[in-house]
Every structure is written in C-alpha cells, then in structure tokens.
Image (cartoon, rainbow, N blue to C red; front, side, top):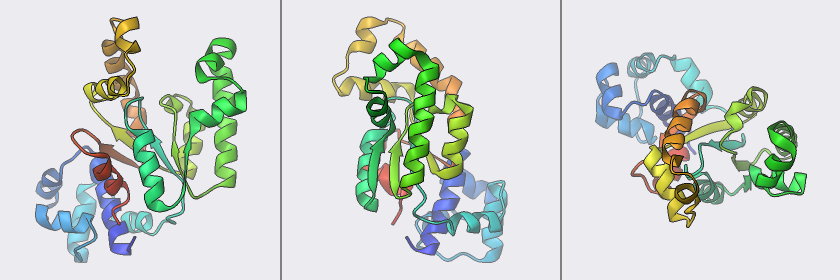
Length: 239
C-alpha cells in the first residue's frame, strides 16, 4: 500500500466510524465528494489546507491521520461482529490478499479446551471460556504479527480481552443490519434460530443494539449491507 493509499484509508476509517457517507463528509468539510473519493483511494494529492479541513470535519487532526497512515502494515488485523457479519468469509479472502495467516479465534479456543464451543459453555461456563479466550489471544499475538483474526462475536463484552485486542491489533467492525445477519446464517443452512426460538430475530436485534457502542470502538467500521465480499476486502485493504 502506498503512503497516499494509507492516508486515504485513515480518512475513510474515520468517516465510516462516524457512519457518514462521502457526501456527508463533503458537505461538512467543504471538500468535493469527487475529490474525497480520489483521496480515499490514494489517487489524489491534497493541499495542506484541504487536508486540515477534512481532518477538522472528522473531529481529528492532520497529524493524527498521518500517524495512522504511517503505522506498520504488519499489525494483526482483527474482525469484529455478530455471527453473520461475514468475518470468516471476509477474513479468509483478506488474509489471502495480504499473504498472511487467517485464524478463527473460536476454533483455537475449542482446540485449547478440547471441546466444542457449545460444550465449553455448558460444562464450564462463561468465566472459563473468557479465560481460555484471553490466553489463546495472548499466545496468538505473541507469536504472530502477520495474521487476520476472526474474533468471537462476544469478545467485546470482556473489557480486559477487548482492550488487549484494541491495543495490539487493527480492529474492524463488519457492521450489518439484523436482517443481513439473519439471512446470512440461514443461507449457510442453519435453520435452528427460527425452529428453536420464535423470538430469535427480536433477540438478535436487541443483541446488536446492546453491543453497537462496543463494536463502534473499533479502529474502523465497514457497513457490509449491499456490498460484496470483494468490496469489503477492498475497503479494508485498498491496494
């Protein structure tokens, strides 16, 4: 990734974290939407005055954006989101694009516990799961900086583990509507949510609402609604 692309990615991450479209940022900053598109894809040089206007509109400073752009590219990348966010699919393709390893954190937890995830909770409870999750994540980050991680959906509920993740990784929330999460799970052939719990969709909606403020602490938020996997991967790594 070129430095201009890195600057553009930093600008886009801040914009998406606010939930703004390019048009909204253009209206707030006074910089044209067309030029912002060029900036975010690394195709356009920008004057210091315009760059300062964009930074101010995003509630940050030019220096902070440049620091983000100059951050090491080999920092681990962690994907966040509720089941159906696309972490596995996006993560696998992103890791292939970057030429790095892809890790499903829950699979590592199952291997460490010697049990399927459902049995970990049923036999040992959430506190045990959280301890193993933290140990597995700590070991993974200590031994591999070139990795894309698909995290468990509830990792944001553990303040200590989430703080570790945010300190050591570039975190990306794959955001979607409740309908998108639901339809993706069903498309994978899992009919259990509807069959076993008639209130499952309402509970999913409530879960997303409860966790939204935690997921929003990620370094970047990407709305995956109506976007292909290829589109999402390109937004995360716009080379």
